[in-house]
Image (cartoon, chains in turn red, orange):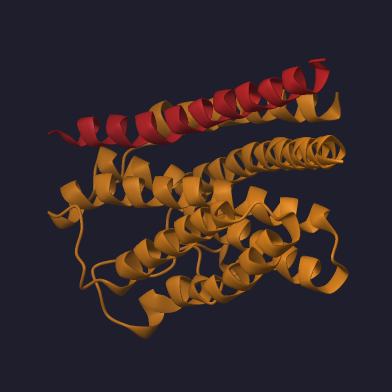
Length: 39
Length: 231
């Protein structure tokens, strides 16, 4: 693998992971809010 | 609303810092493009320290004040810290392979103590699942969180105390920020990435804390309902 490949792999996982975790957190917060509103 | 603004600011900052690190700042003369991995790698490592420091402080505050809000802070720090530690390890591996010739070396004290840090806080998160009693869970977690934090200075100073593959600290002390060994363009890019990631960290900490509080409230409500049904 070239240097550029390692750079893409590093940034892809770190920045992509940060985005995925944020989305997952939003989903979990929404799910808790939905449960709270359930009768 | 303020948290949402913080989230948008963090998103823009991370996008800008990533663009600068990948496309604006020049490649290192010796390491080439691989050195660009240093920016998110160091930022992730810093936030891992910060997160686990918060977990330890939250644990101490819980043991002292017996307020479950502190346990929620500790939990947020641990979960986010595990993520940033994994990012730091991954970034280090991707940087290490082209520069050192290996992804990993168990003989290196920095690598091994960082892996131990990750294992300790994954254990912290698993331990929290062993009981549904919030107070017992908080006490057990606080003790583990405080003891595990002993590894933070060991990780940080491992490059000074022992010989290994890993380089010494990128910014050794605050007074070297304006007089760095590296070119200012590299240091400025690193500080920009540190700032952007720290904004993202602050946003995620607030949201994870809110989630922990909401989950605790739901658990308490279910417990009260079960007690009422039993009567």
